[in-house]
Length: 389
Image 1 (cartoon, one colour):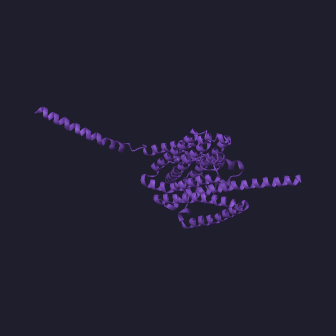
Image 2 (cartoon, helix red, strand yellow):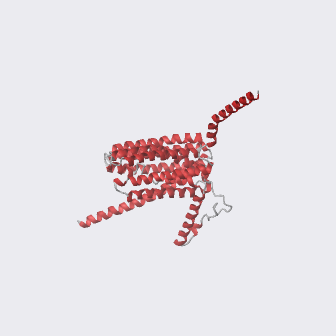
Image 3 (cartoon, rainbow, N blue to C red):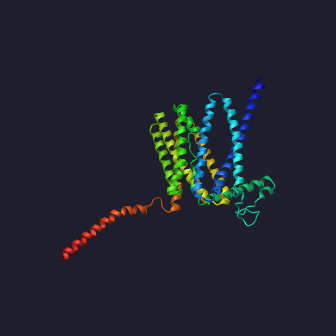
């Protein structure tokens, strides 16, 4: 009997390890797909039309957000009936989505000839634009040489990323992944501990996604009005303001857990407009500034930073795992968002030379001053003329 129990437990552990391994492979493929389609293909398909690029980015983000809302919601409803049925439905839905996704990607690839063109501009057909051998990795012998090649390639890509003119907006966007204020597992667990019900959390999460979808209309309109650089500054400021307000309420009412959590929920929900709007603005800037031959390497390093900061957000709740300690991960999240906003503000200043239109404000403020000066000059001239008489 004990032997059967041990064997059964070993099988369960083995299946869990195998499932986790496949999940890691799926995550890696998902990142590669995102880097290829969202960061590179969409720019090629838009064919340097800024308005088309903004529209496509907004529509893709809108579809992504709606899928993230409707997918878990449908699974949760089915899970209320039967967990096994929910698992089978989830597996079936994923298999069907892979088939549809592969067909859509293949169709776009073959219908847009520009996607099949070589982006490298090197003089030799065997060399890339940065002088790296095109097939040298396959000719390397030994694990040590291959690891050395990968390390050198990673170092070159990192230097390209850090020295690029689009580094600051890209890094600012990646820094936003260092957060627990996103209605993910960490924040949901804390809300449950404060007395929130699953239904209340579902409503709050739905409102959050609604604000995120709203940002896919607000951000393109704002970019059309004032440009992506200034629009990103506005969106970043909105996000920081809302999170700071929510966190202030959260800290001020620590003795009332439900009220403090409500303040955090409100600030987080309202900040989603700024988050998604800022994401669309930085995405446009990176897509327009990064050269075609460097777009893959740049976006890969950007994705690496995003995942690194996301791991740090999980590490923060590992270190502060008690519900009453959640204020420290939340403070870290707000600090990270403020740092991202500061980095982007520096980028705006370096790119435009100023943050506000001081000259325009100066012209407006000078209008009454000039009128007063004109009146004074006329009065002095009248006094002088009367004295002469």
